[in-house]
Image (tube, rainbow, N blue to C red; front, top):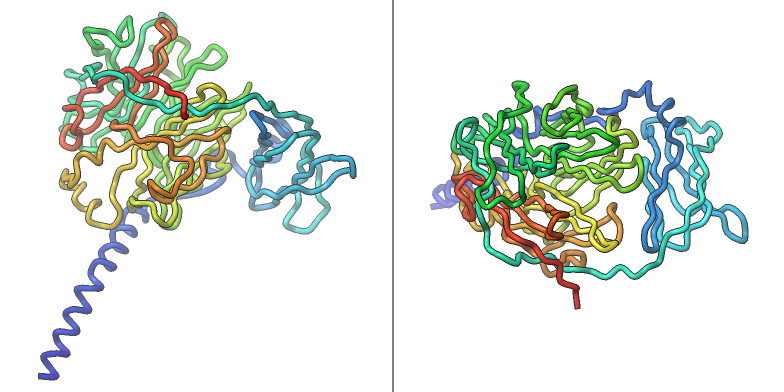
Length: 441
């Protein structure tokens, strides 16, 4: 009898340990090929020159000031001071090229503090005063039904993450993930293109030739326009870029970030926050919890990780081995910032294994998009679950949405898309619906 009980105990122990072993195994499997490096965009030798060239740059808003610079965290840390009636006093320290300060503003100094204990060196001194105009919060809501926008037929059979913009001819363009499968992410190596004169067009968009076919994974494109050039960015695991003079023909392909600071770097979205200052928001994961990272650039070529825009912690429902906070998108509306993310990929090993076989256990969860708010574009707080996250504003039923403003009719729109085998709002096409902003009571 004792032997039988012992065997039963061993079997139960193995069964209890099996989920832990599988969880560790899946995480090791998906993480092992990924490389990380803070200096993945700027070589160590180039840091000093760019640091001197950029100095300290500022962005400010209602009651806050952000200081930004080129960092060299292997060699130095940074001391931040402010000048008041008593003279200069320290208000904080930083490891990366970012410091967010709340208050009346004034004169700031950033010191380089070498780790070899040599004398600190002044990096830059700036004076900036934040504004204090009221900044009400608005709740975004869908105000109409979904209508079909674009479905490729010749070069793909669906669209997942995508970007929408107007080209130099005034036409609206959609560039999105696709493949000639029913949603095999390993085959997504170029982008489908849709075009229409109006947005949204009643007839939908017509298909144009695909772009960005370089034999590598091509996920989550994003296009911006700056100083006479269109720029397109995409991932995963490194940052690809191209430029265009008209938003139609693309050239100058380069990989400008070869290794990110955190693993599971993908779904990049770029927001300009000041003249010659841009932020790149990306999916990421820490040791366990999912998050949205922010990278900073002063020229759209050199990028450095500066902080986490949104962290998740205990109480967060989803923390997949390959990160659950996907497709970040930041919108500025009425002096407030809104970060949306599609909250996908359940925790633990099972979802990751089923994904390989195109099985999504809870299909409605595929369309779960969370919207957070902040008075600045750098810090959207911590997500600890729906009921314990003050910055969580609302949830929208959409997957990988783009927020689109049409200046012709003054209307905002939201899109949704996704793999045909997983999405429940669409069947492979991109759909669009009108969006309204309702002032929060």
